[in-house]
Amino acid sequence: MNYDFLKVVLPVIISFVITVILSPIIIPMLRRLKCGQTEREELESHQAKTGTPTMGGLVILVAVIITSLIYMKDYPKVIPVLFMTVGFGLIGFLDDYLKVVLKRSDGLIAWQKLLLQLVITVIFAVYLLKVIHMPMEMIVPFTNGYRWDPGILTVPILLFAVLGTVNGVNFTDGLDGLASSVTVLVATFFTVVAIGTASGIEPITCAVAGALLGFLLYNVYPARVFMGDTGSLALGGFVISTAYMLQMPLFILIVGLVYLVEVLSVIIQVVYFKITHGKRVFRMAPIHHHFELGGISGKGQGWSETRVVAVFSIVTALLCCIGLVAL
Image (cartoon, helix red, strand yellow):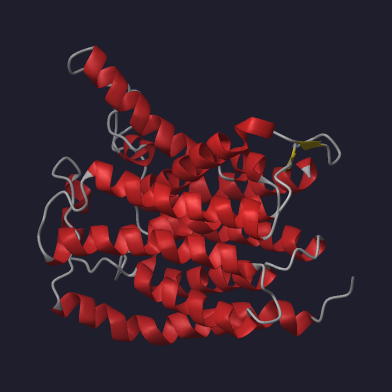
């Protein structure tokens, strides 16, 4: 199928322009509201970031929503992806608001956040299964298009995949430009696949890529704004819902390996800390802080923040290439 070039490029441009225009307006507002980031005391090099405005994910959400609404009539399949993006973004916004505006240090309690995430995920599952009756087979990487039907495991796997991916993206958001850089590459990968398969969701994958490119202008080191849970949870919802709409959740294990490693590093650290009564596997989790603090040996100054972001982004770019080969 031939695609009009502008139908692919315009969503990127629209979303990019919205983000670039809104960011200089929203950032001072966040600063006036004292929506500042609080850094962990162990990270001495990060202390200068304390007070940097967070909740910048609002700009990403606005850009993606406006761009998607423009194309929604002709591309109705963007609806479930937009729902997941906005739904998880709202959970993140509520968590951020409680922490940085109302000064409740923990934000949403763990069970509250989990319950809200489950509600959004169940609605998404019901929409796919009962409303649009979407086949839930998954393309298996490196099998020349073989599709696996998980049967009765469909919903449990979906719940696990959503919660794992969303929280993986959330943990990845810990360095200037890290989550943005990694996810813009993942969004580009999904855009290539969406266009190649005429899936009908390409406007929103393009919109997310454009919004992240615009946001990176303000989020790269030294960051003028952080996306907060508002942005990271929204991006997690986007990644996993896009993967399901393309029947490619298994590919997250490839293109989203950084997310997986980040969330596993936190789980391993917490479990090992508890069973050994205080010992650690990593110098600090999530794992990007481990590299900052000198890696396994802990000798020297470790990697700079920009180097960690560059390495993780390069790895993701290579993994996206592998993902295309696996498809």
